[in-house]
Image (cartoon, rainbow, N blue to C red; front, side):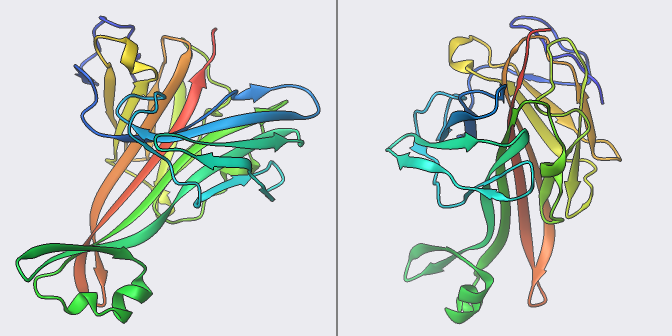
Length: 272
């Protein structure tokens, strides 16, 4: 699927839809101070939040206990000076290897809800604690599994591909165009995988950042093709936020449950 991302007020082709107005849902994101750098060694600061407007903290801070950084050689990189306030978290990363770094936050878990003594009860945790606490035995319990990832990529020197190895669980990005080699007015192609296979029919939302300063948000809705691919052309140099979501039916101990998986990536388009 191909489209051009419009400037404010322009029209889209029939292949996409623009959602007018402001976002109605809270969105998770990580935004590095710089996406591409040069030199032998550099520092970046990364902001993380869940907000109503992209890259404007105004709701709650992102939890940092699930954040990992992977260096170009595949080894873990320690985050430094981590802190969390009410509406924003931040941490620093020292880049001392040439190539691309992967910054990721997320995890998997189970959610349950049921009625008890006239009240709606809610629970979240692992499969082990689900069984240990007897959650499955609650009357009319509804159980779902969630797998989520929020990522961004930063490159020191020339872009590299080592950090794009996939795990085969949930939604994952397998870039065709490198996330740190994107330019306004040039076509971009991303492939999405679901549990290791091309993710066909996955809903994608793409939004240019700093939507607080626009009368029209300009969110673009896409759908992956049979190969899990989406292709688009950003018209404007800016940071962008892309979200992929998929829901299917799974099972737990032979019982059907809903499985919801999501993937978010932040990247920038540079001036052409």
